[in-house]
Every structure is written in C-alpha cells, then in structure tokens.
Image (tube, rainbow, N blue to C red):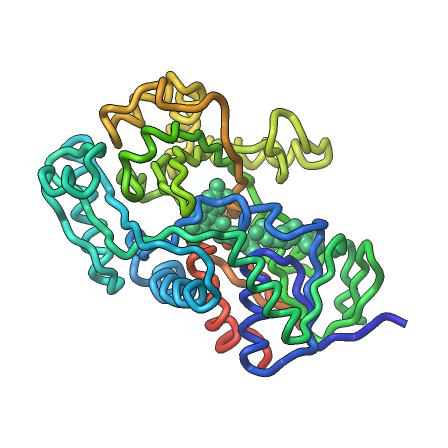
Length: 401
Ligand SMILES: Cc1cc2nc3c(=O)[nH]c(=O)nc-3n(C[C@H](O)[C@H](O)[C@H](O)COP(=O)(O)OP(=O)(O)OC[C@H]3O[C@@H](n4cnc5c(N)ncnc54)[C@H](O)[C@@H]3O)c2cc1C
C-alpha cells in the first residue's frame, strides 16, 4: 500500500523547501518532498548569481515587487540566525548614454514605490563606491543588495526540515499523477496526497499539464553562462555592477557580481537553450522536446513584441569573450580580455514561462490552482530572494492551512 501524506511537494529547490519550512513553522509535519535528482541544488537554486535583490526593477502591482524586498529581509535574517555566509556589499546600476540614464530615473521611481532604499549618485560618488565602474552622468546605488551562499541556504533548510520530521526523498522524480485517486507514481514508489504542490522548476509545466492546469503556458529554457575574472582584478571590486536592463524583458542583463567567497563573475547570458537541462554543448537535447522549443522560439520571433530578435542577436554577438567586451566595458571601462579566466565558469538555466496563447515571455511569478493542487509556474529571478515571502503568501492565500 502506498504511504499517504497531507501535503506532497514536487521539487526540492528553494521554492519547495521554503514552502515546507513555512508549513513546519505553522506546526504541520505530514509533508513529503519529492526530488528528481540525487542531491539538492542541481538546477536554478544551486546555479544562480547568489544575489539577494533589493526589489528595484518590478512594477508595484507585481508579485515580484510584493515578495522581493520582504523576501530579502527574511532570507537575510535566516542566514544570520543559521550562520550562513551573507554580505550586504551593495550594488550600482550604471548607464552608458542619455537614454539608458533616463532608465535610472524610472528604476529610482519604482524603488521608491516598492519601499526600497536607493540613491541616485553622481559619477564622482560612483568612483568612491566602486572605483572600477563607469557610468554616463549618474548611477543608482542600492546599499541593501546582498550576496548569499545559496547552497548553504538549501543545506540549512534541509537540516531544519529533517529535524522537524519532514521527509525529503531524492531520486524520486514524479512521473505520473492520478488526480482522481490523488496518487503519484515516482521512481522510488507510489504515494498518496491530500494536496499537491508543484514546485518542479524547469518541469513545472509538465506536472501542471498532467493535471489539466496552465495549458497555455510552457517552459522555454534560457541559458545563463558566467565567466570568471582573475583574483587580482576581483580584489578591485566591492560589490555588484549591473547595467540598466531592458524593462520589457524578464532578464536583468549581464552584470558583474562579487559573490560571497569574493569571486568575481560576469554573467549570466540569456541565450535560448535547446533543452531543459542543456547545460553544456548539445547535452540533454531531447528529440521529443526540441521541435516544441523551436516552435515556441519561432512564435516569439514572429510576434517580436518584446524585441526577442534583438535579444537573440545581441546574445549571439556576445557569446565569444571578444564580442562581450564592449558590453562589459560599459560596466567597468578598464576591464580587458586578459582579466578573464578562459571559458565559462558556471551555467544555470532559467525556467522561463512562455505564454503560447499571447506569444510572450511571462514577466511575473505565476501561480495556478488545480484540483487539490497548486502549481508554481514561473519562479524565475528574483525567485531565490523572494522565496520566504512567496511561501508565506502561498500559505496565507493559496494553500490549505
Ligand atoms: C542563471 C540564473 C541566475 C539567477 N540569479 C538569481 C539571483 O541572483 N537572485 C535570485 O533571487 N534569483 C536568481 N535566479 C532565480 C532563482 O535561482 C530561481 O528563481 C529559483 O532558484 C527557483 O527555485 P525553484 O525551487 O522554483 O526551482 P529549482 O531550483 O529548479 O528547483 C526545482 C526542483 O524540482 C526538481 N524537479 C523537477 N521535476 C521534478 C519532478 N517531476 N519530480 C520531482 N522533482 C522534480 C528539480 O530537480 C529541482 O531540484 C537565477 C536563476 C538563474 C537560472
């Protein structure tokens, strides 16, 4: 007979773990987390920039705006309590011409509306804060942006959940769901649930579709590659340097991040990936998925409403380091190719949601309800930062008590 749980969560990324942790805080223990991989952090939650975003970019009415600032505060406090490395080393957003400088003013306005502490600073003040950064006329400074040990957070949550009696099973991919009998088939056995929470990241659409939920949405994976800067140059930077992004796109643009260990990374790119786990070369490209991905990319190109073709063109030109340098010099004019270690240092893939009906990339987090189930469909950046506040809201508004 299969074992029964009140709650089953598919996916042990930050979202699945944060939801389980919120349940634990409220005293619920009949929870099982099922994870496809043999270890935690194999996908976005273990492959991100490790930035606790302050909440600058998002329009006031969005879920991202709602959860990012408070999520950052909650995760920062959790890190302090659990002795996980975290550091508020700040971030500057820079411009390169009059048009991009005007975006700084828009971002300033959004930050104020979102209750985020920021300051518009002059070129001279920028030099004092971040001597290697450059800007056109002015920059935006966010003192509360932090960096965190993402894997340390996953480890601590895992320990807390296990300590609280919540079971996490690895190598337990959810394969089939029967919504009538509320049973699940996994690689490590069958389970019954009273309520199912889908936090399966890159595969969240597949689980949702099995339950006839969110049929108009599909995950369109976007690859984010990072390059690493040599140690001696890294020592010259204090925090993160970001460009003003294209506000019509859900990506923040290639930036420079000084991570929690002091390593300096440049990335991530935003190149369409040819498979959900296409981390390297032609790995993990599946013949049953590739035509659908190409079809969706074609859909985005035809409509081109979010200037998708412009994104692809610039991503292709930036793929070799030489092509990337003009862009990097907008952030830090003194950097040269010699400052970089060869090749890519790390790669992550965004579980970006594509709205096939409207042929658009979905900008905000998306939560869909199904029969005895909730599906978290677009937990893209700043999903890590937002996770604790997002989980609290899910339990208050969408999930059974
Ligand atoms: C390159 C990159 C940089 C980023 N930088 C930042 C940043 O600096 N700050 C920030 O806040 N956010 C950042 N993000 C976003 C952030 O990483 C994500 O929002 C967050 O990690 C999403 O968490 P998740 O739990 O939804 O997904 P995941 O971490 O992908 O977890 C989902 C889990 O579900 C499992 N799974 C999948 N299918 C099944 C199945 N059928 N059965 C069981 N388990 C399954 C997967 O193996 C996986 O472990 C970045 C993302 C990327 C890709």
